[in-house]
Amino acid sequence: MSKVLKSWSGMRKYLEKDMLADSLKGKVRYNCTTYVGMDGCFIFEVFLDDKLFKQFSWETVNSYFIKMVYADKPAQMTITDYWKDFWQLVDEYPISERTEYTDEEFSEALKKYRQSDIKDSLYSDNPIVKMFALLDRRVGKRTLDKISDSISSEPEWLQKVYDFRIK
Image 1: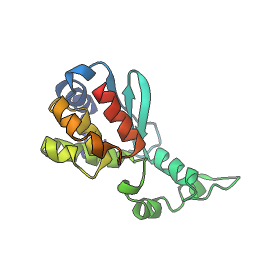
Image 2: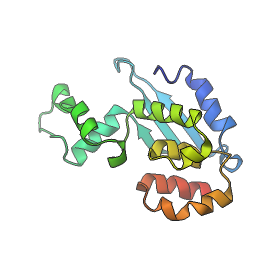
Image 3: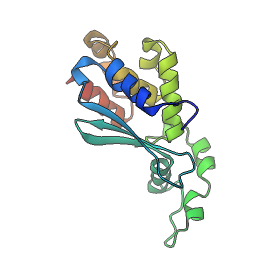
């Protein structure tokens, strides 16, 4: 597993039991999947009300690049073609300019969230760090009300996390 995540079961307990707002317990679930041949890559998933809400993986990012026509999608695409120029595109379109993120970006955001003050996480430029903070038990109604205007400038998926939290 990633250097950042040594024990997924422990991390999941931390996110779902220790840090999750009481009103969201049982409504937010995190999952981590790996498949044979993925060379240490993972698919992290966030479920809201038992529905898959967001995935974090190389695959979701590369599919995003193809959908946004940043990467070519040849008719007879090989694995090599599919992943061609992936890292160049990741550098060209940083996390602040995308709405899909890799498993490593998820892991690094989780590490940053765990090591930061909750206020710093809530106002982070990293939308994944901000997601963790929005779901955090230390963020109350008054704080959520205070940031309501700034949420409209966030990616749509993060706005949905905010709406889910305030309901």
